[in-house]
Image 1 (spheres, rainbow, N blue to C red):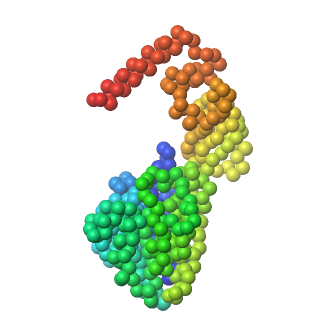
Image 2: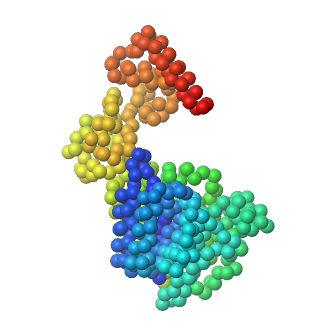
Image 3: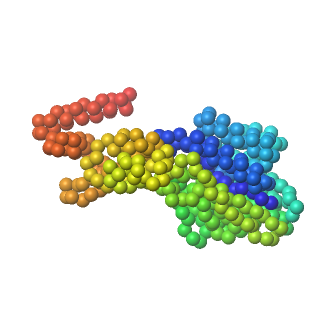
Length: 386
Ligand SMILES: [Mn+2]
């Protein structure tokens, strides 16, 4: 049985101020082509279909179009679970109806996990659908478990369900969460927002032929049988060096090891860092790859550049941000983001004045400035109180 494992689509997500909907539509079109070319038997989506529990209408429309084409035109069954970004209850809408056209969705955790059986020439493959869950969900489903930690929650739920597992056939787990083997996992910024979730030992999935995981955005193996496909797109600057892919999994006869291949996803626009002197960065000939439509973050090496972001935007319409070297009075150069947090509004302005005019802010202006800032702060206090 040949299947594509993917996860963490985050449909509707913005990267800084930019909507990624076109990039996501581009990925989904490519995915449909791949499903057709590879003649896959199933598509597995291991959670975080959407970026928000209540996704924007255009994100829902995008997923809707994809589901229709995959199931009705290509006839490929889809097995999906909710991630922590999804609302499980909403994602499950019309789930029983949609099962009849081959779309199987598990949104909320159940005491008895949703199982779907597909068959090929080697016999049945049982898919186990385990959506994102909190320990409190498991305490509700299995009150005797008293599960307080993620580890205890997964242990209790698997203990309840594994007696149904038939080792003589192939079994595939689909789950969304933070699972770890013995080796350290690769994290990126996008995962830090999740917070509070302790890693669960991937040994829990040992009884399966393959565990299709979602949540971490870098593709990686976890333990013996489990694997994160990673997100199809770079969803933060910290993911700039990750090679985004979907995972093609081939399950042979029962007892054989799954064959795994990473298929790189061609991005509509890359996410990357550019670095150098401002004049060089502004010069189109300086950029070898000429990909001006990419999402770029510019690290400028020379001091004193004003309105760098606005100027670079004329060459890079999808510029994400800039950093500039910034000299402290003691001469230590630091990045502007860190410096900003350490300066008061008065200090910021004085510095801006100095950089713009080359002169120190006169004392009489300082007093006026202080007054203005005070009245602004009072206004803000009134607004927040009302
Ligand atoms: Mn997630």
